[in-house]
Image: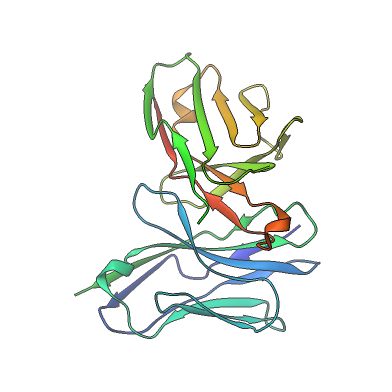
Length: 114
Length: 119
């Protein structure tokens, strides 16, 4: 079984300030790691993913996440946030050999203030 | 990119009635689709895995007779909430997994969700 913990349920941040969303996971096997973003009353959009290779992955809109196997973490960062980054962010994992079922963390609500 | 649609986006029904939600992969064939449930301000909980041409696999605690899943084609899966009650009110989200041969192993694309309100 696997589990995902997002340590912060809410993160208020001022516009143009940096933000870090923490994600830790537990699994007995190798995993794929994902960050999804959800805007109000919408489905999830993939932000970025780690499947293999470089442990630092980046999205097209300035987010990045680093896979740390020893700490079983996959924290998400952005050096300068915009108002439009206000949303719910979910970290998720799937075991590489389990039909790709996703297990989600509890979510972190980011509120960007002007 | 891969697009997944859901219909309807919002539905209100009376207690005791059944509601069908459709999930379609618009520009790719999905042998596997997933159904999730999300309560307000909570995370997504996987309800079941739907495989084309076979019975769905339900997660522990999900009533298979209450949440009927049909995956009759490579682009369509349906979730029917039977004899709905107010406690079934929730946001239901589906996802479709791209074929492994596409090179995007493990990636799921999500639908926009269906908000069900049972009165």
